[in-house]
Image (cartoon, rainbow, N blue to C red; front, side, top):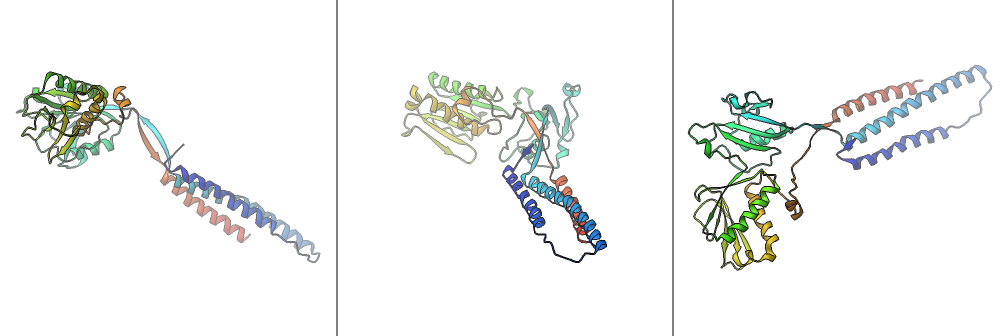
Amino acid sequence: MNWLNPIALWGLTALAVPILIHLWSKNKTKEIAFGSIRFLRESSTLQSKKIQLSEIPLLLVRLLILVLVVLLMAKWVNYQEIEKQKALLLGDDFKVPEAYANDERPVFRTSEFGDMSNHWYLLEEFSVQHPEIDSLIYINDFKDTDFVGAIPKLNFHLELISANQKQNPQEIWSSDTLLIHFYELSKNVQDKFNKVLKANQLYVNEKVVFKEVNREEAQLVFTTSPQKLEANQIVVSDTLSSNYQIQRKYKSSLLYLNENWLNNPLNEDMFLLIVSEFIAIIVESNYQYSSYEMLYTQKSEGVEVVKEAKTFDEELLWLIVLLILLERYFSYRKKHA
């Protein structure tokens, strides 16, 4: 059994109350001397036995009501393991491509989740309704405005494939590809950054791909001075007074690193952490980490096993209602016995 609110189980100690009341009420009976009337004595004896017999089921019903109320408060939940699988999500007017026609993966359509202008919200709804999905291929005619706003945490690996005929298939990157560019950096500094990128790639089991492109297309630019771009930038500067500094902008962020501090071997761990956290902000929907140990041992924080939770609140409520009716019935019989 699993409980969402196990502290409520202490309420089972309340079962002692009706038992003590039952025992105490039996001891309260007093004998009163009365005339020797044989038939009246026999009648009263039979009647008292009936009352005593009706008290036992009444007590049990009241105890059971208390037990069910406590279980309802403790939130009884049963977890069932779900086998994760790959799925295909299609836009409204798209047919299943031939490459996926013979696959056994389930196929969904965006129309099943309502008319949503924000596609991130659509995918978030999809992840809630289908926790069994491990990997999702989303095929649609994407536009620049399809994915806007904050990127949600998704519990599946996502691959976006554009069906736009005008777009070159060679230029279609999946959502977990970060386009990077090194600009005017020394070979030594580039090697340091490449090691950080490799560490991040290994940590997330190669779910994040770092693709080198030109400066104009880059999402992350490694440079010696700030560029007039809306891309995120890591700037290596020898004039920076502090070790590092982050500057937030409307559409991007800049991480300034002191060049002398960066080249100090004693700062390798801190350098790895700072740059990795900065990259994690850019691809926040794909991964996150919380310690050096997890980063170095390449352990993923992703959910390995998906479990579906089934609660019993409704069933317990109906049982409580039925038992209350049964308790009233036994009370009535006892009173009119």
